[in-house]
Amino acid sequence: MRPFFVQLEINPNLFLNDPQKTKLGRRIIEQSVLLIDEIGLEQFNFKKLAQTISSSEASVYRYFENKRHLFVYLLNWYWEWMIARIDLNTMNISDPNERLRVALRIIVDTANKNMTIEFVDEEILHKIVVREGAKAYHTKLVDEDNIDGFFLAYKRLCNSIASIITEVKSDFPYPKALASTLVETANNNLYFARHLPRLTDLRENGTEQDLNDQVKEMLEFFCFGLIHKDVKSESEIQSMMIKN
Image (tube, rainbow, N blue to C red):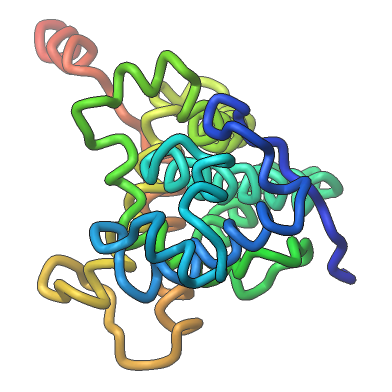
């Protein structure tokens, strides 16, 4: 499928002026992704970003209130991009099992993409999400941020996957929990394989695509194994024991 260009709708609570609508704003987003990947979130700040884009700190502050808002904006961009890709790639697939497999592939692999935003390197942003994404919501401010809707895109992404899970098995008891677990498991195991290999069974002994394929295979094993497993609750088990 030929790539096409899109503009994603990001929560306006995250920015003061929409960076997608100006040349400077798009450059702020583009270079933020590259700089965070290069030096890490802790070392990243608006002074260094301003130097990178040959502008002033004040110009960056005209778009974002602080570094945290900019970082969560990037994550929201990524989550919205995932949602759009899942919708695009599953719209003509009737079999829910296949739709679920496609969704699992998309949350792991950014290489096979068919939609493009010129000013964002999606593969580098994916690396940032894997390495640092949890820092957005594992914070003291998570409840305040949640009230402001900072994580609505992440919730929509998980709900999108959960709805497909429900299509596969309508009485599956934990579709949302499974969906969020699958997303987190993908990111955690990619991270572990690269940095803490004893915490995962994945093997980083080939190309990036080899590792992504391993993660997708693992997610399918967990996902379909749970969905199609005949799970009985503790009360059902106790009832069976009493009857016997």
